[in-house]
Image (cartoon, rainbow, N blue to C red):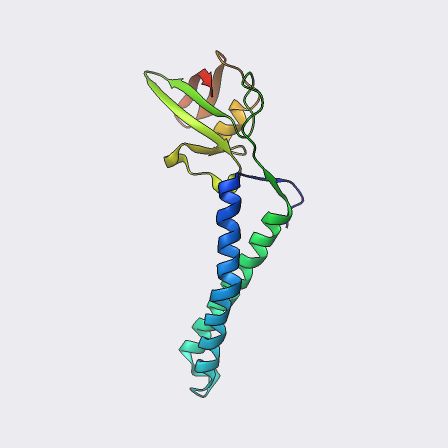
Length: 154
């Protein structure tokens, strides 16, 4: 997969480990049981239950590999150590025209813009990295260029 670090919060790490345990301990067992039951129904070439169970098994095994890869390259995001400069783990407040918005710079696996969590790999996240309070950040958007003022690094 990839050899670069995957940034993740402690909460995100706990969530992904829980998902991995569920996939390995519960879902795998359920799928194996479904496959066994589907085999008992006879001809596998025309057995929709068997085909669906095998497809689900492929998805689960793929997700397990994906999570294991994430865990191997995971770097835990600590509270940003520098309040002077934005880095992964920083919480920031910006002025977007007349609106004030808050963002938390996280790794791509935890990004959720609706919750104010933006990826360090996103255009917005990349534009903020390394900036300081009072800096004006310009980002090209389809409508032109948007300006944001960094009003606080929390």
